[in-house]
Structure formats: structure tokens, C-alpha cells
Amino acid sequence: MEESRQTSLDHLLRCRPVLMPRIWGGRKLKTILGKDLPPDEPIGEAWEVADVPEGVSEIAGGPLAGMSLRRVMERFGDQICPREFEQFPLLVKFLDARDDISIQVHPGADVCERLFPSERSKNETWVVIEVEPGAAVLHGLRRGVSFDEVRGRIREGSIMEVMRRLEVRPGDVIHLPAGTLHALLGGIMLLEVQDPSDSTFRVYDHDRVTPEGKPRELHVEQALATLSIGSDRPARIVARPQRHDWGTRELLVDIESYRVERLTLSGEMAWPARCGIPGVVVVMSGDVIGRWDGGEEAFGFGETFIAPPAVRNLTLAPLKDRCEVVVTTPAVG
Image (cartoon, rainbow, N blue to C red; front, top):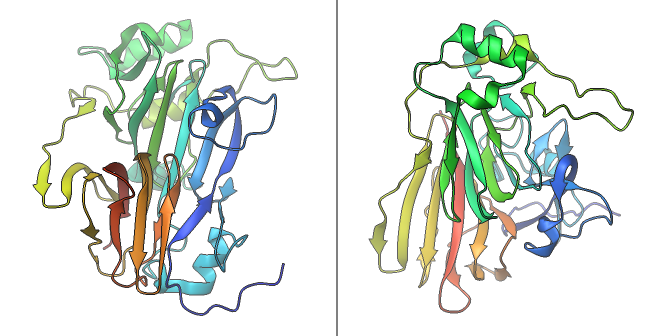
């Protein structure tokens, strides 16, 4: 394919996901979200917007169709992202956990700097989409659990017994700061927003084995060096909706690396220009249409697009009565 000679990034970027097989994955990314999955393979994750060594998403349509997000970053520079970012600063994905995922923890920036310079900090936020009866998440440790007990429980394989269990419903928002021991239990599909990192330290994996029959790798010492103990921070985020003439806005998460908002649109909203910052928009219900100088495009449930800052006079509106989108923007400075 001859590379596009386009010099201005003046339109929305529809993304094609990177599909990740996972031992705990299922088929709901196809049956519910309509993703084109390979047959007979458990797909646990669809990386909608990704620019990390483990996977890079592609542009799915328009004049840049087939171009990787990495190449878009190199080619268009600050038309898509402030120059302070060497890679696209967000990783946005869907997860389908047919079975329990491993008990794991992600490192924070300070831990990476001191102990694991080859790793990258990873905070993440979940927005629940579909839940089977009785499904739950594990988020952090119960009050009073000590570091020594954690080490012993990991050794015995009983760490789940001292973790906080939270039953969830569609629409729930769960934030997981780096250092939080956690797991997604079987029967949940969700949207995950995170720092652009795949750094994960597993402490327990339900005695599963690889296709070669070997136990899956654990990272106990790294996890213990990363783990935060004694936090009483609520797992579920409860946001207060702000009403506007176009619908409602909920600020879900606002941390040093990214901001997540949920918009329920019943009318046309002018996209807020934020100092050259891109936005990643995921359609969570209904259909949304984006209009800008020189173009328009519609997106359906489960689709993701990037709104580059070079797009002028962008508005978003429901294609019919209403729609819901999750918007993520990177923090700058």
C-alpha cells in the first residue's frame, strides 16, 4: 500500500484493534461488541488504541487506512499529540474475562524509577459493560492485612481470601491506582483505560499451565516490591452528573496521567479544545456522529476513534435519540 501523502491531520481517526489471545478470554468481544475475532481462539483483550512494544493499533478507514498509530505519531507530530510524548499516551482496550484472570499488581512511576527501570507505570480504570450473575472484581486487600500475611498467603495460594470482593453492575466505574493488588473474575466484560504500559506482576494464576504443560510464570518478589498496603480508598467511583443543554457529563477519574469522562448525549455538543491534546472516544451505547470542518462520520456501539487536536470545530451528537461515550484525554505538563 502506498503511504498517504496527506499533510494535515484534519479528520477523526477510526481505529482497528489489536486482538490479544488470553487463556481466560472468551467470545463476547464478537457476540456483544461485534469484533471480528479469529475462530476457536479465546480472545481476552481488544486493544482499541495502542502504541506500546507489545502491540500497535492501526487506522481503520479514511486516507490513513492501514497506517499504524506509531507511524501517525511520527508523521504528524503535534497535530495528534504534544511533542512531550514519544508514544501515544493512552492505552484503551476492551476485556472479556470468561474465566478469572490472575491476581496481579502494576508498578507505579516511583517503583519503576527505583527498582524496575525497564518497566513502565500503569494506572488503570475499568468501566463495566456486561456482567453475568454473581460476577465480581477483587480490589486491594481487606483492612488490617499485613505485608507478612500477604507474603504467606501468596506462598500458600490463598491470597484471594484476604482481598476485597466487589460485585459490579453495568456502568460501574472501578479505578485501580498502580500498586493495587487486583483481579477481574470470570463473567465480566469491560472497557479499560490505562497508561501506555503492559507491565504486570502476577502473584497467583489459579494453577493454570501453558500449552506446553508448564506453570504460568509468576512475579512474586516484583509484586511485593510494588504492592501498596493499607489503603481504604473506595474501589467504585461515584460521579456527580453535570447537566448541560446537550446532555450530562460525569468526571470519572482525573489523575496525573489521564482524565476519564462519561458523556450522555441527547443533543449536539461542541468538542472542547484542550491545548493541543487528543481525545479517545469510545461509544458505550447508541450511535454518535462527529461533524467537523469538511467532514462527518458516524460510530456505533463498541467503536473507538481518536479526535486529534488539529480537527477544527468538532461536534458530537447522537445519531438518534441519545448515546453514551467515554472520553479519555492525557494529562500534559
